Image (tube, rainbow, N blue to C red; front, side, top):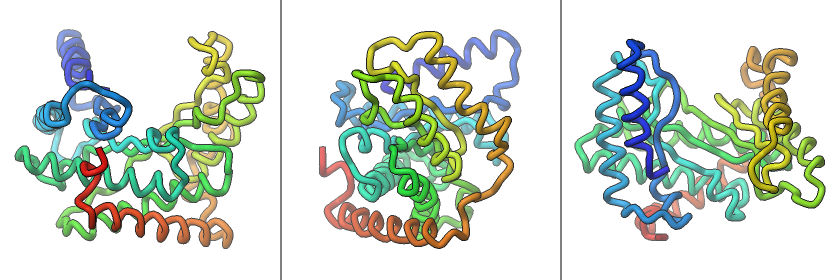
Length: 271
């Protein structure tokens, strides 16, 4: 969130003191100022983007050329999902937020191509199995289209997608049913091609999750990776007509919404 810059500074200071190789750090320290603003963040947008530009420039100086394992910029689509957006809207608003971030970084002296390589895309995954699977596949198609439209000479090698099981569908009255929801949502995220995954504990709607719930959430994704071995399969759902058709349809719907947003001046006009 808004504490991305101080949190990253403290973390890297600790690593430096312990003698760790900063260039090997992998993860995300960034935030999405637009999503934060819609959620009531008090930090002004200009200040938030200034901090992100400083953090991104610092990371760029610390890491080896072409090494983008540490991300400092975020397009957090989960915020739109939890606010009630459908799959196409979540894709379009996330793309709009990402493009706005590229503009803001360019205005602060950072190349859009460099900024694009430091972007992490975060999506929430709901219970509609095929739709959510297709949503992540469509996201990669759309981002490739955006990079082409931007005219990047060296486009990012890949789009890093972080998926999180959805919060708006969790039940507080019968929390154990959330175990089933989290399992199907995790599977659709993995088959959709996410690069990293957060599984919400089944008792998250009740407050601080219990150790048992956290353990089950962790083991859900470990089973998908270490026992089902889905991490070894590239585009497991590719070629299935229903999935391919749904992916194309979602991509076109999202692109239409995204173009409408851009025609109206971009995402900042909606704040």
